[in-house]
Length: 385
Length: 248
Image 1: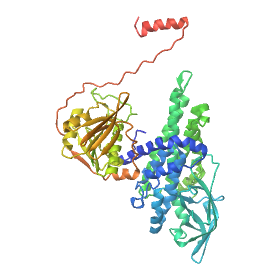
Image 2: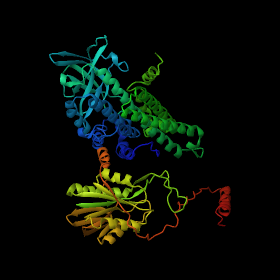
Image 3: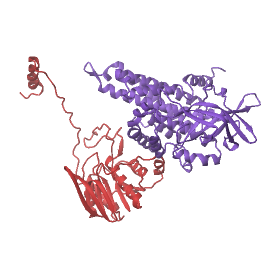
Image 4: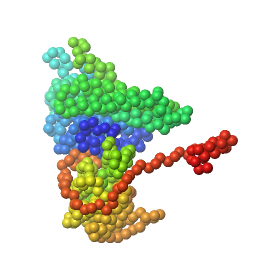
């Protein structure tokens, strides 16, 4: 971690400050919160205080005014110690505030963004029980009657949507048919105070157990035109652009988790002795650690470069898919090696290895499975033309 | 309140240190530098006093290297402005103290804070030297501080106990761990620190009082050997004392 990869002095200082916060505030509680499957309002408030909730929002909305790479570094540093807290921050910034900032009207931005930078959370309602990667199969519908919209349907696996400090969610719904016969999608802003929306927390997760995950149910949920995000019919386009950037957050989580698992494995391997020698001196372990270090170095260079592309406004559909795919598979391998190197202890909750091993699995599934990432890449390189 | 915090740029305590080719300096290649940990307590105390009583906090450093990074760190924590005195070569404590005293003598600081020591050369000298040069009272290794107008009550750690002293402003205080819990710099403050002013002040020439002749890394302690009480073990002890340690 000594190489600074063309980071600015502010980015280096910011990384070191976030790392210290993560080590001193989050890490000591991570195991316990995971065990209890408990969302921490206290840590979330501390993270809000640090400016993590409005990371890239401009100052006028109460944000921290960071560039995109700095935001990614925050997610990476938190994921290095705890994926659950990193998930809260990543989902809130890239899926919660991101679309409101990118597509919201001035009134919507002024109304919601300062609250979302200051400690309130926001969800992004896209996935449905029968529409994950196949978002075109969305069943949630909204119809318009005398200037009022009525939404019916449900959403599932929505991060941050049902905490006591959640203000609302952005919800994708089918609002009709386009002239070419395809479905018309529109995004709606739905506040948690709306009696037509019910938010139910989902329990029993394997991973990210101290982050909040919810189901949303809409039964004749009424909103007016002012609650449309952007323009009617823009929903699908907004969603695809949001996911392009969202993949970078997941990549950052993979990179951070890989780094955490790598450090944990290396420390253990240097301490633990078998047959009179540290187990890091056995080639079978040394090569595993060398492989992960190599993967982390390459992943970090690539992810940071894609963030710089995104900041310049370049199209990053393929690059963000590659970053997400590579970093999440790297995290898988790192966590696997980490448990293996810990041997029997790696199977026990007492060591972080066990939590890393569970937490990494989401990364190959959420925000587009690894299979979908390969599909995105193979399409763009022209395999199906 | 007009508050000054003198800070120092030191190698990260987790960094592996190597001696430079001249045998007198640290090889700075690949070394990560940080704000001296004790200075964080000093900064935090000054910032709290400002938040309570109003006023300004200035951070100051004297360094042969570009130390604007640690000054930005101080600004991100809450200092309002900074002074950077660039030394032509690694200064000794006497030169640093003279430079601090010279640059602040007309600035009417109520309190001047320091960390109790900087963790690189550990001389412990600068706070008292500066106070002496400015002819103001000083108290070192302070773990609790109360400021009421011009009256200052400081509790300091002494061997096996605490000592409470009273003095009046202007004065110099060196901070001990436990004085407070330093804050984490918040992201918006890190961004704002970029825009805060860092004034560069020319080095005040004064001869060094101490010359470094050499520095060396501590010799690794030899690892002890534990042997049993069998005849072969006893033979091994005799052999080892005779051949390895060469004491018999």
